[in-house]
Image 1 (tube, each protein chain N blue to C red):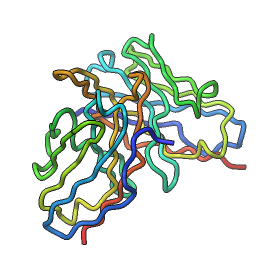
Image 2 (cartoon, rainbow over the protein chains, first blue to last red):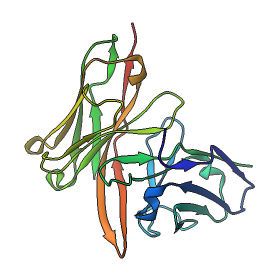
Image 3 (cartoon, rainbow over the protein chains, first blue to last red):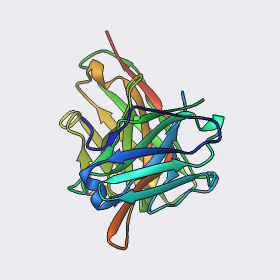
Image 4 (cartoon, helix red, strand yellow):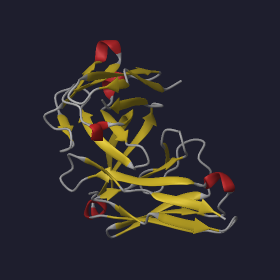
Length: 108
Length: 125
């Protein structure tokens, strides 16, 4: 079982805003990172740290954190944002790595 | 260009062995910690193993501990995963990924910023 908990599926209307959440005890000490994965492709880092986007990631992607919950927000979702999204951090010991179970985002 | 390329996947019988490789280029490999992450068909991402930049610190997921061995050769810019006693549940795409850990204020930040395209391991008779 994962130490980071995500909703299995979320949907959003085209152009609207959607928030994907991730809960876990380690998130009280770690900023979560977020990855986008499309079918047949490797994961791509979209958010890391407090709210940082790697080069090439659109600014409609943002991250936030409160207590044991991290959130990935997509403001003005596009059709190409339809994908699986995973959160990630170290575990509470700091030694092991954990992933959330993933959230399948559908853009309607 | 920063790049990771995995190789060595294939079909293996239960109980068999396989060695995966990950070739790094475009960055100073010896300065980075590295990971193996896998994804079973239709499932989510599962972290498998971590190795420090020098190779002196290693961690494994419970699901592979005692069966898998991670190693690296900084002179060859390469990461490896020796997989023994393979089981059907080890069937997955295996990715290598570059590790980043630091602090920002009271918090740690952690992320994997470079991923390979993966190599497929199928364990079946």
